[in-house]
Length: 296
Image 1 (cartoon, helix red, strand yellow):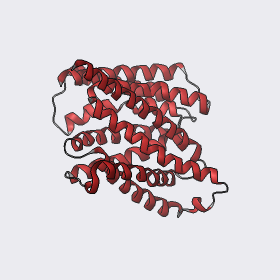
Image 2 (cartoon, rainbow, N blue to C red):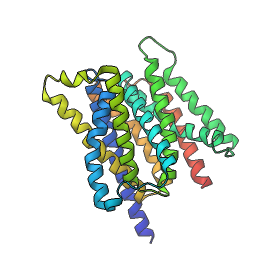
Image 3 (cartoon, one colour):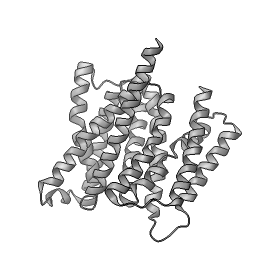
């Protein structure tokens, strides 16, 4: 029995690492596309071409009931926060360095702790409260002193992405108790497609689509959606094989992934201040994760 559990944990870890790697492939594609296309148009293509593979897999695994959902309110909240989280993440990486945006979004466990107090009324010990304050100190180290070169909107988008993602994961866990992940993903992506389409039509009337001078950009937009299908599959499979408490520390691999992508693809410069602020955030969130695991 122990051997099976260890094997499952390894499979879960490998799938999560695949999800993290895929997320930075997608982030790089978004950053390349954004100068020519609005974030909402990129989102539209991402949602549109993410759906076919998800629908095919859902029909294969669930048959005629592939769209059946029991927890409608939970689905609505997961979908809304998921859309806001992805939108603000795309806005963040198009306004600031990927490495900085990644470091700022690692504050998600800090916000989850705050929500557990405010929303769920949980009792949080003094040590965890101090770790939350230390985490925000790390954010201040990252962004201060504020210079004209720093896009504060990008910083705000990254922090909002952490907030909305934290709320999304809360309701994703709730949904996982009653409904299959593939079905909730289809509803989420279909709703995101409609919302992104309405926003694109309202803001630029899809003019960017008609201005495609070469098919390369269109192929990249289509590939973005298909690869997003695999990202969601990897994420769902990781939680199928291993518990969230086992996978939580692996999320810190996003930091080296973000730094590597930023340096190799976008010539980002990593400063001592960045490393110090990131280290403080990682230490704070790691402690929070460990305390949460201990209390389970």
